[in-house]
Image 1: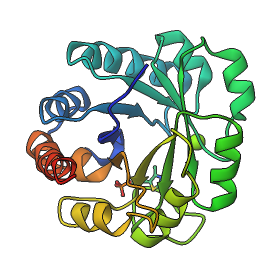
Image 2: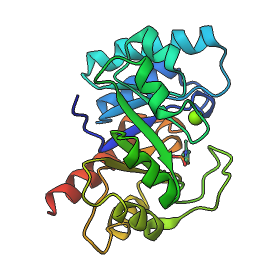
Image 3: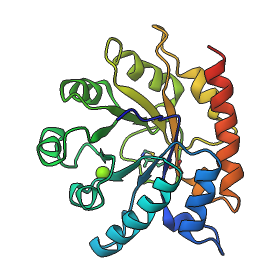
Length: 223
Ligand code: TZP
Ligand code: MG
């Protein structure tokens, strides 16, 4: 399945502002133009993760937006998700592929060129590159790479059709700098950006998403 990765929302329910319900924020984000959603549940037990995935799937289907599950192959299978996102210490890609239906989108997190080389060997569909900027959403285990760091990983993707999304500390203030600054010397550009807090922590997720989307649309039309 071909996914529009341009505005990739990764959920973070623990970041919701007071008075906001998860599904309400998710729906507003979808209305604001989010193009793909990843359910990331680091603190939930299996039942809670499953229920969140099921309710998110219904909402994403309403907006015809694909749903990706972080880490959990079993949850992805249970809700017939469009894809899974795997970290470097999650299920290896070849094992995930052996378990999931053909055509399930597979993405992996990369923050150095060795990760990218492995992702190419594994024939993944997309990579998440980061963390690009500082973030408090995730405890980082390696230094931030900045837009230029993103650019060098993009260059390592030259000649492949693997999509690339940057993540980590991206917001409406730095999105353009992120897109611009990450173009590799070979001209390779990002396919999208992923955010957690800029949308999930917002009291107005619809306009937060819309702001990012407007910049992305302007960036795309620039070429
Ligand atoms: N992977 C690398 S940074 C990050 C993840 C999941 C968190 C990004 O969150 P935010 O709030 O968009 O900085
Ligand atoms: Mg993981």
